[in-house]
Length: 485
Image (cartoon, rainbow, N blue to C red; front, side, top):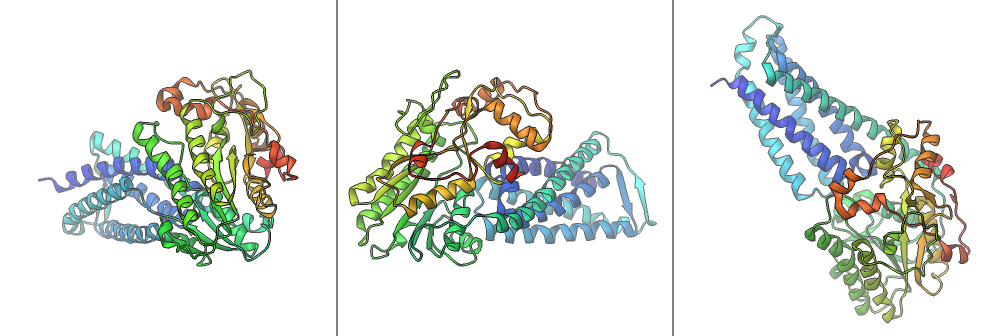
C-alpha cells in the first residue's frame, strides 16, 4: 500500500469537508464573521487555515526530506494544538448545530488518519539528505494546490474579520449612546439575548442599572458573554412563580434567512417564535407578580408583499396578507397578545432591516464592497430599515413611557428607499461603483417564496413611534451607514 498517496487522498477529502464546514456553517448558518463573540474563534481559524494552506500546497508536489520532515511534523503538532484550543473556545462561546458537530468529528478523524499515514513515512524521509524535492502528483496534486489557495483565502478572510470585530468592539464601547429604560433597578427578562439585537439590549440595560435575566439555550455561554452580570436560565420552568419580573423583552427566533421554507423549516421557525412566546405567556399566567410590560419582537413581514409601483406608506393599521412570512408574524403577535389577558401591556415591535455591524447588513454590503453593487431584481422594491441604535433607543423609550396603550409599533426609520436607492447610497458611502444589475430569477430558483424577503418589499412608516415623541438618532440612511462603515 502506498501510504503517502493514501494520505494525500485523505487530505483532498479534508479540503472538501473543510470547504463545506466553512461555507455552510461558518458563513451561512452561523455567520461567524459578523458575530462579536467569535473574534477569538476566527483568529484561531485564521492561523489554522494559513497552516493548512502551506501544507496543502507544499505536499501537493514536493517531498520533504531530512530536517524538513521534522518541520512538517512540528507544523502538524501545532495544528493539532490549535484544533483542541478551537474546540474549547467553541464550547465556551456558542452552541454548535448538530451538523457542525458531526462535520467537526469527521474532520478530526480524517485529519488524524492522514497525519498518522504521513508519520509512517517520517523515518524514511528523515534518513535522506535535507532537501525539498519536486515530486508531482498529477491531478491530485493540482487539486491539493487549489485547496491550499482556497483555504488560504479563507484564512485571510477570518483574520480580517477577527481584526474588524476587535476594532468594532472598541468603537462600540466608545460610541454606544446611553439609554434610559425608566426607573433603575427593575427586573428584565430578555429572550434572544445572545442574538445581534439582544446583546446590544442587555448591555444597554446593564449600563442603565437594570437587573437582567436571560432565557437562552446556552446559559453557560451567555454567562461568559455578559461577564457573569446576568442570571441565565434555559427554560421558563426554572423561574418560580414567585420570581419578580417587571418587564419582558421577547426577541427569540431562529434565523429567518437560510434554506428554503420547507414544511420542516416552517415548523422550526414557528416553534422558535410562536411556541416559545406561548411558554413565556404561560409563565406570566402563573406568576405571582405580573410584569407591567412585554415588548415582543415581530417584523414588517407582517404586511406581506407590497406591489412594486405602490408608494403607499404602510402604518400599523395596515392588514396582513395570506403568505407565510405574514402568517408567521401574525401568529407570533397573537401569541404575545395573550399576555394582555393577565393585565400586561403588550407592545409588538415590527422590525425592518436592522442596520448594524452584525445581522444582515454585512452580507448585503459584501457585493457592494467588491464593486458589484447595483439594482437587485429591478431595484424598485421598497427597503424599510432602522439603525440598531434606534432599535435600542425605541425600546428604551417604550419602557420608560409604559408603551402607551400597547399594540404594534413599526421599528423603521422615517426615510424609506427603494432597493436601488439603498444600494446607490451604500456604494457612495463605501466609495464603490454602482450599477451592475443582479437578476432576481436565480434567487427565486434557489430560495422559492423566501426570495420575497429580498426581491419584494414594503414601504413602512414608524407612525406610532413618532406620535409617541420618539426622536430618531439616524432618520436618514447615509449617516446611518457612515456610522457603521
